[in-house]
Image (cartoon, rainbow, N blue to C red):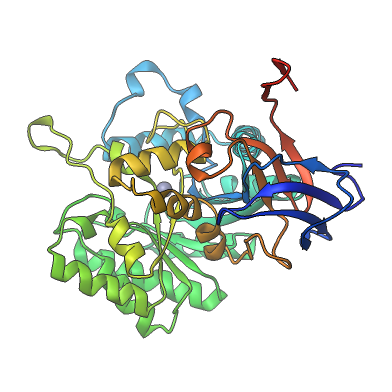
Length: 414
Ligand SMILES: [Zn+2]
């Protein structure tokens, strides 16, 4: 029996390091690795068996709002979109958010995501409607995917009302606290925003994930302050910084000093390549000046860097098929990570590195979580260039999705 109450066996698995093995999963974990005689489960036929994809930064509450937008609402600037978003949020209902977010989350699962961390807007416009909806969705999908909810202050934190809402969100099921200093007007207010985040996170003993320096403007460089606060507040290992694009625009010495600070504070960096490349900030002569953070230098200096799709089919990003493969393609293209060893690095960014941020023990060793994908390719490079990319998605040792692929021998779909 496959995917039921009996232990699942996967035979002839290709491993991320190029080796091969059979597996038995039991009680949600990898219980045996090596040569196994009885192979009643999946025959991987040499295909790569890899820790599941982890989409560590997305916005499920806004996902697919595009389907509700009118033609004249497309193509706006970041500031215009933030205002437009309010009109959608005023009409949120829990059931509508559950339906929309659930549809998009399913698209992620069937393409190999075994864990997802979503931001959820918590502010005076949305109140706790989106958060309540996502708490329900998390329960509904608990056997299919590890879902973490990050209470996200899309409209800032500098009022008692906004802070109260965030605290209530953490009490009602949000797993951690998000941040967005850029939404405040002055540098001093942005620093205050970060101070408030630490106050609330510390009070509720929660991790932090702060969206920071996404404007690719060297004058908008708050990351050193976030590092400083993380060390001062003794929050080592509990803070992730998402975007960090201005790090690419400051001089090399400043960047290296900041990266060393990230290392000391054991901070994670999350990159969302598609969204980073499309955001419309004021541009000189209409020429895009978008960029990504210094991905290669961060990795070379031992920073845990993970990957997220960010927005899916909404006001901020009009595309998105929920594929981590697609996001990896954009990352590789934008950063020119094309050396042979880069493919493994990028695969890790899309899986184990995100799992580390979410506190999940991912890997292909005995005792690790049996949250794995059986891919449609023998190594990372083949999977990146193949279609479909994933044949089986396994969560807690149980098959939760499978994809039909062409059987080369018989010329039919199986
Ligand atoms: Zn985001």
